[in-house]
Length: 601
Image 1 (cartoon, helix red, strand yellow):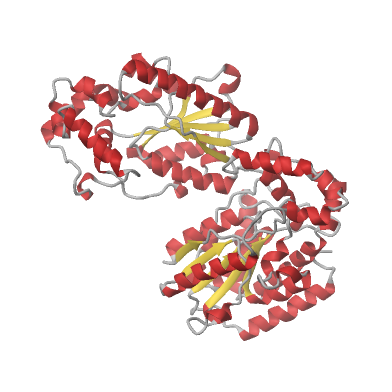
Image 2 (cartoon, rainbow, N blue to C red):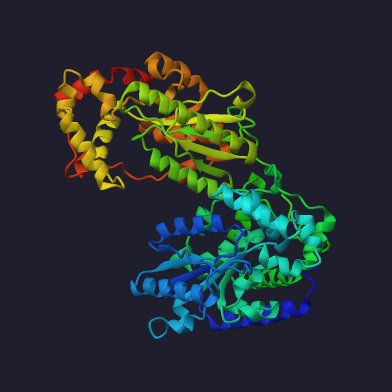
């Protein structure tokens, strides 16, 4: 009934689409800003990643507003007018820069005429993306309590709130006598609200939302992604040319991959479908609009999109979804089998552990994984506990033991509560019990030891550390120990003992457990490489990323695309950084001979 039923809805949309096609000139070369008031749980993370990639390719700036609308009725929040005012203020500031940009966030539809005479409505376009409403609302219910949210306390608060309102499960929510009111108390509001302005908030009927569709250049539909991207790239080429080539074509993660996620039965789905009937009508209207927009494209554009869609389906790529048919509202099922996996792939891995070695490109590596975690919906957790070798060895050993115990506790929590996760920080190798070993995979990243130690020396005193006092303390400590420069450290008679005091410890230390800490030889670290699925090498990053993708595809399948391909800052680019001479380099190679042997391994 989504496609063929609801004739009045489809007729309205067809009239709007025809009017839009006749009154608008596509492609539109005069666009200065594209506004994306993103609907939650509709593939918006992947959509934003596509925007970021397209923005770079098309010289367009990408701006995200942190102001967001909420329909919660049980919390003291900003009013819609206050929130929207902040969003409009942010938008005006961006328009003032006179550069093309995509502006996105969770905000209301806006009347772009208010930005005249600075910019006319034809210069500013709205876009959005939606999905099958039932699929969205189930996803949102599970995400709020079990998804990769940054603060575990938030999940606990959500669970407690649901219990206090008598709706601890999706079944009880769908059948609750006051479910219409609970929608807003539990953050389960309909998606149609995003298609109304702040002024229309209290009268945001489905008819009003459908009428507002003509204010959108494109409303993409997750289940018809290739058609959506074809319309976008044709209508707004200055922003989205090549969008289909850069969209993260990863299959949407279904609830089956989440241990705790609720999987409603057919009766619950039927109750939810009735509960969100207005959103079902809006979804049907968006489908009709997209069909009209796609049909208006030139033949060669449509044929290319259809060929791409077919190729991705045959290759087992893409989002793996199809349009719900009559009588199957909301049951969006996967239609492709995953591609055959290579024998090198590790099976059954629940968590990837990265006990990151400092000054080896770890910031870029973590940035890559944060992007992957958003796109693939696995949990990313950084432990704030870290090992240190400064000060007296006895004191450091005690603090390291305490830190290691806390890290293990954090890891145990992730294993218990998250189906898939990426766990990282500067901690010792944690040898897991045999029952757990197959569930976790260690990875790390190393680089040439001499380059690393030069980088670390300069970073501690001259790098972008958050607290200027830290830099001054590092400089004063070096002076007090008689090693004010790298040149002096390399030649100091007690240089082997000074390494730990000035935080210049070897990288092999990360490849030993806390028990092996005081006897962490190169041989021990090399023997422990057996615990790692992959040890990437910064100087061979392309090969390293390819190996990560082959062994752990659920976490790294598109790592080569996501890794920030930025040139590492060279010493010569830092005004105060020390550049060691050949003699100093030779002495440093001798000083870190064990790390060089480990690096070769």
